[in-house]
Image 1 (cartoon, rainbow, N blue to C red):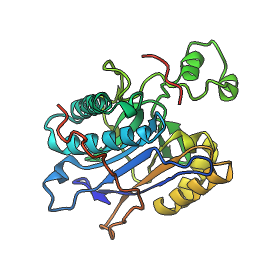
Image 2 (cartoon, rainbow, N blue to C red):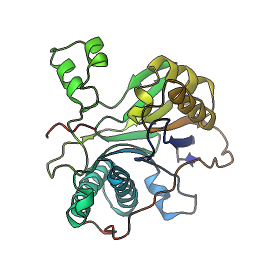
Image 3 (spheres, rainbow, N blue to C red):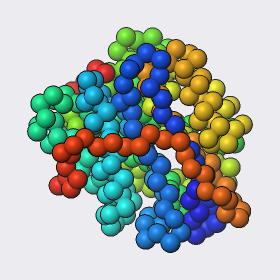
Image 4 (cartoon, helix red, strand yellow):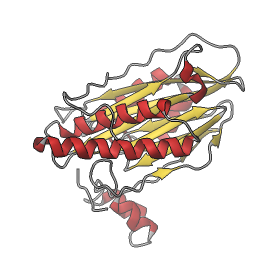
Amino acid sequence: MDQNSAGMEIIGAMRTDTGLVRTLNEDSVAWVTPHDDDAATKRGSLALVADGIGGHAAGEVASALAADVIRRLYYDLDGPIPQVLANAFAAANRAIIEYAQEHPECRGMGTTCTVLAFRDSHAWLAHIGDCRAYLLRDRHLSQLSQDQTLVAKLVSEGTITQAEADRSPMHNVILQALGTTSNIKPMIGTKGLSLQSGDILILCSDGVSNMVPDDKIAEVASRLPPQEACDALIEAALAAGGHDNASLGVFSVTTGAARKRVEPTTRRIKLPIGANQNPSSSPLPR
């Protein structure tokens, strides 16, 4: 739980699941909420979903590296939040590339990543790939991130319709990911989204968004508290087939007296042995 100077609280939870088809979970999640006496409190809270690509454990390595580097640098670096997030994404990209160069078995790995940073009644978005960030306000769900996928590009250009994109066999071809090229173009919000009491923000991997319709996401997130909403939406993704790893975070904006800290159920990040702890656009099929 994060309580900022404006009296708003962010109560959140996260969950990740391997799904019903895959044997390895290549997703990583993080939800960091500094304690009131923590020097990092001035930076606020950070939530992250990373969906690794590459298989043979390499996707898990990439997503774990991204989560660790972005989390650390967000709290270690000084400066405006958009610039800090941009620098953290660039450092994570370098760390993944360098690790793959040193470990040939990990060549070709990468990860998508979507981040929400909360501070002073605002939320900042940083995003690359096809994980998603949503805002649920007054029961209306809007997507804050833009899918960096081939079909999304074709839809925006008017080449195909959204219905055709949903049926396309190229649905999972992504155009941008950390660790796949030195020249990345993440989406970094330059202005924070002003939050209102009652807002609900959602982060998810495509293992949720491809399995659970937006109206179902909105209905569940508006009805249940964050941890129960995470559980219900992951179960909905599994009930729809569970074809992919499924990761989700739900964050509720409230006002009032501070409440008991909610401990999220998440998968602990396990960095690979030898990972660099101080890390100085072709289509990518999953």
